[in-house]
Structure formats: structure tokens, C-alpha cells
Length: 215
Image 1 (cartoon, one colour):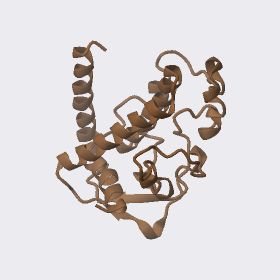
Image 2 (cartoon, one colour):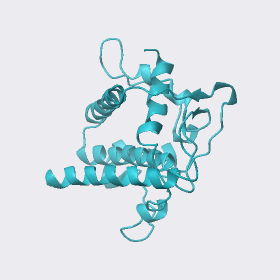
Image 3 (tube, helix red, strand yellow):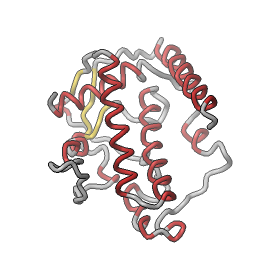
Image 4 (spheres, helix red, strand yellow):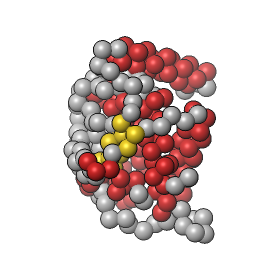
């Protein structure tokens, strides 16, 4: 499978699976982010005395921990159309990305405190994409940054070690080369209800698993 086919598969089928999905029925971003009591800007540079967090805030900017605040610039001559695949195929690819994220965090960061902060930042980005799929007010159009995604095959070197070279971008570059993925089934009349229902049943399943595991 070519790189672009892989990207198309992941981006478009996330729309069909999660994204057949959603509605403004969930918590607003502010409510979800600050439900535990008021907005407080946290600076992470050298937080807790960890030198590995130096320049952490430079990546997305202070008060933009999960990178939700970015502008999209669309590449109009390179729009994609989703093509439905067997859900198992999508689940396999996403599990690969999940395991690779675990490898990157556990191999490249040695302090568990820093591992936790970096993971929560990563998780926040995924949560933001879920909101976009549900068309929550204030979100982004469904697509991906082709420049950033193009580095996918550079994560692992030929000798199966993780690469550690600087690829020359930061979170401030996110969205500047956005490729739109079309072909989804969203419509403003029915989808807010059906997608909201899909979100709730998924959340209930996840919450049930977490409860059974003692989380």
C-alpha cells in the first residue's frame, strides 16, 4: 500500500467509522477542557525541573497545549475522496499507529512525568480530531496536513531504530497544507442526531472497559 493510499485510508475511514459520527450534542470545547474548574494557563517549559521539557511550549505555543488553535490552508488541487474499506483493515492500521506512539514515547523519553505530559498532549490532539468529526462548533474541516503526514515513513530508520533528526517543523506549521477528504455521509439535518448517538454508545463502551479495568 502506497503512502498516499495509507493516508487516504486512515483519514477518510476515520470519517466513516467515528465520523459517521457526531454532533454538537457533546460538551463544548471549553466545557470539556475546563470542567474541573476554571481556565488556568500552564507553562511547561522546565516544568518540575525537567530539562527535557525545555522549549516544550515553543511547539504549539503557550495556552495551546493540545494544538487545537490552528488555521487551515487548503490545497485545492489535491482533494481526496474516501473509499470504504473493511473496518478490520482500518483497525489494524490505527493499532500500528498506536503501538508506534507508545514506542516513540517510551524510547525517546526517560522520565515518566514527561512521558505523561507528552502523552496527554498527544491524546488531546486525538480528542480534537474527534470533535472535528462530530462537527462541534469551532472545529476544523476534515482533512490532514500533507506536509507533516509525508514524514510518516521517516519515523523508523532502515536498521529498525527510531530516527532522531529534526524534520524542520513545529505545531505552528500544522494545517498550512491541508488536504480535504470528501465523500462522507454527513448531512446537517440527520447527522447531528445519528452521530451523537454513535458517540455516546462508543463512549459508554470505553467507559465500561475503563471501569472494569479498575481505572
